[in-house]
Image (cartoon, rainbow, N blue to C red; front, top):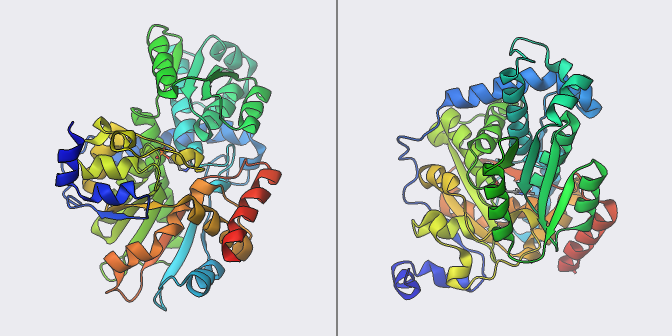
Length: 432
Ligand SMILES: *Cc1c(COP(=O)(O)O)cnc(C)c1O
């Protein structure tokens, strides 16, 4: 790849190199054809979650009230909307509504990875148990808490490469079922995450060198071991479908809150993006349900615009932000990604309306504003959706009398309080 030629073709790369917030509009949107998934695949995933619900309710008491279904609330955040208008100058119309999809509050692992990561663990467990003749789909899966299943699963291992929330989700659910769990992390991963994983009995490997290389090794190692399953953030269709289920759940919540979604009242859904698994799964699901009346956007750090760069140049996973001199350094753990997932690009290429970038300072600023106005605490990655509000509104929504905006809050539920206090402090400094 010749970078100079690429820049001539896509001068937007110069904007990205300046690390200033930028919105790219997708010229291919809504031309969806031949996607490799259908709505039936999401239904299949939802049914699997339903089968596991009795087990989850039993194994994780915090899910009992919701009958073992792992879901988060959709809440209208009026005080946040008012503060964004007054303190930052965001240009809402009077009738616009702003909602938060609270995945920071998902039970079990406190982040959006409790959708995809946990789904993949459950699917692997079910497949093994059925193959061994220990389980049938019509059984009550509450039986999975029995000792004989733990013993059975302890013959198998799950491996995952993750510096954060994916490792936590796979580790917590995998260990609960009885699997051996190996989590590959880089040495600079947060100490509390390593400690938490070790406390549930996962093995944490710390890699000092090239993390991508370490993950590739883990992937290879698992291939030659039939009793090991590698959860692959970049290629996994199970992760994707686990995320897509969120769309069905959101549809119900939208109806419950009497939010109309039609040609005059579009829905804007803004999702922080790392490799793209979560936003592509959710976007795919929402497009299946709401079609043109929903527009989805990804938010990425100015220092790690992997998805924006991959989609814009149409090189997908064949280009990394480092190739154009962007350093990938950001405080947004879940979003510190240089190269997007190919599977995610394949889906978002026709489904996403736009991709924008946000500065780290803005992540902390909006994180603090949300904590101050709504008493909702999220991690830096999770506030990314707020940051591009004016960019999106001015490009897409000025002609509408009412737009319903849903900002997806993707994590923070497991962040230790002392760490959270520091995040909020840093954000509050920008209001002085
Ligand atoms: C993983 C993660 C994301 C993004 O998900 P991808 O599938 O990597 O795009 C966003 N926010 C948080 C907090 C995450 O952990």
